[in-house]
Length: 353
Ligand SMILES: *Cc1c(COP(=O)(O)O)cnc(C)c1O
Image 1 (cartoon, rainbow, N blue to C red):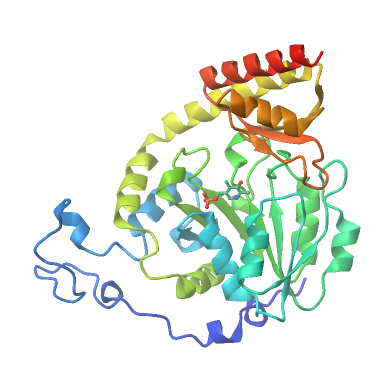
Image 2: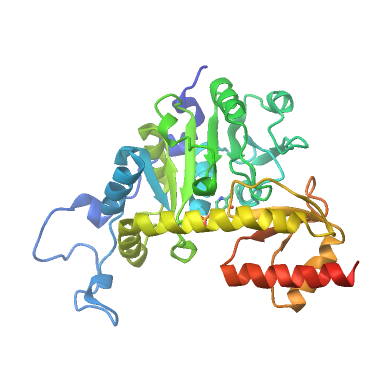
């Protein structure tokens, strides 16, 4: 492999003089802070919110570092994974010239972000078993391919990609390989975060939105070499993680035990729900899941979706998505949610017997 980050980063980003915030220029202890044009009198909320937040999120990264076994220098925090996705496009992809590869069916934001950034999107569909098509992938990349987006476990299919396939991509592609691990906590497979030393082209994304139960805070993580992290830090808005999110995330990080308990409960409910769906007459297939949702192939998927809506239950209709024809994506809910769902589904099956 011939990986050279200097050849990948956009020229304007390499040359960029990043914004230097008041908190960058002075971050020590002082008694009087008159450097950032904040309101020194306070705020309608607590006093703390009149001050700009830590632009480097040092405290969160310290705690994450201990939990993940990764030094802070390899951690980037974004306003949701969605910000990490956008920053990767803006850092590495020259609009109108470069391209990226996605493997659909997959998470929709890679495509939206490509379009926003005017970056050509090349599709290499997954095979029928929702695994990577390595031959097709090799044929699609060229000198202008900057990023390959892999999602494992994948949304909406729910499966993990074969680890050896992902390693093949990492070993043979000279651009950036992003592995989006939003659902890794629900998976049987282990994360790629411990492999950063072996792959200078690897970016692993995770999020507080799923297992951590904090979708409302908007906090996403990217793990990569320090050189890649430094590039993202240059491009990000200085105060991209707000004070409230930083405080609440710090609290949450002390509750790893509770999060692990929730993960176990969700995984157990998922594994219990799969055979229940498999036994329903309308259901043609329930795909194996390494995530907190299941993908179900069912007769008259759109009608089932609408029927569930009349019962006040909303799921995701993926029946028009290529390779997911007739499929519904269903998030694992609470015990009560799941019971209501099963009851409604059984009613549907009886009506349509
Ligand atoms: C839900 C999800 C995310 C999370 O995005 P956030 O912006 O962190 O909420 C990222 N990637 C995939 C594939 C997802 O399904």
